[in-house]
Image (cartoon, rainbow, N blue to C red; front, top):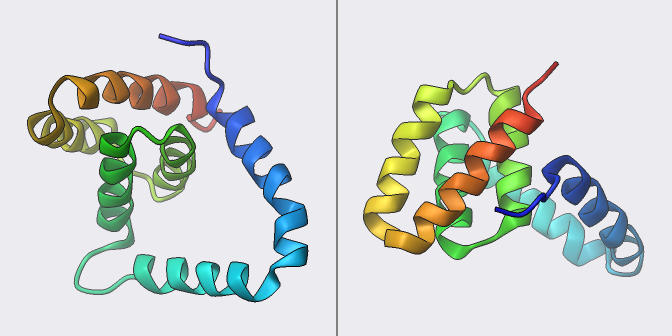
Length: 115
């Protein structure tokens, strides 16, 4: 497994997108609004929605998605048991590649845990 630092990755993505947010404010604001609407509490809790988003990120092999959604799950007080059950579903649906990204997500979970 790589020595990927998901905290640094999240920060780097935000820094790299800062100029794009300035030159493309309407599109970025629309994306932000879409994210807020999709992740708002409803029939599914925000925590369950974040678990779904992380599952998609894992099965798509998106390290940035793993970082952002792990960070959000910590804020939502998700438990490691909830994370691991979701990872089981990812592995079931995504096979070996999902298992490799599940390992990345577990490392991110530990390294991004609030101190």
